[in-house]
Image 1: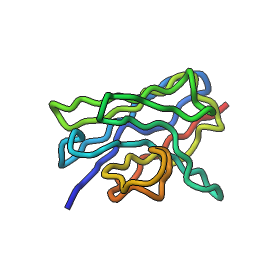
Image 2: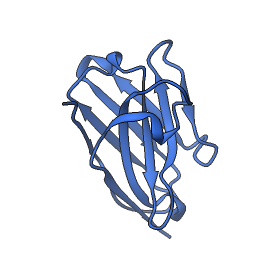
Image 3: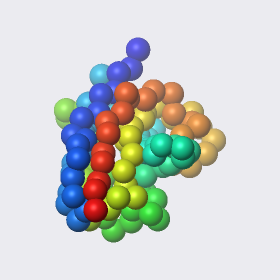
Image 4: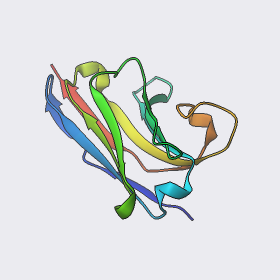
Length: 125
């Protein structure tokens, strides 16, 4: 069973930064991609950023482009989401996910097999 554990969430003021971490029980190299998602109350889960392990390409959603960056430390089975310029609209529970099934883009939540428990990010104005 693959385990993913997020950490690093918290409460910040608008304009501040946070770095989320995702610790995996597997090497991310063995997963075709990994991704970060978020879900705000009453809203659908939204893809935020993802990394394809073949070639290392990263993608970020338009809503966070220029502010959020995804990265991986394959030697330590860790993934990170660096978030800058946070605003209240970024308030959500953030999840990491890995081991996708084929057939869609890496920001599609339907394709991922394993999920972490989530970490809360709250941004106040």
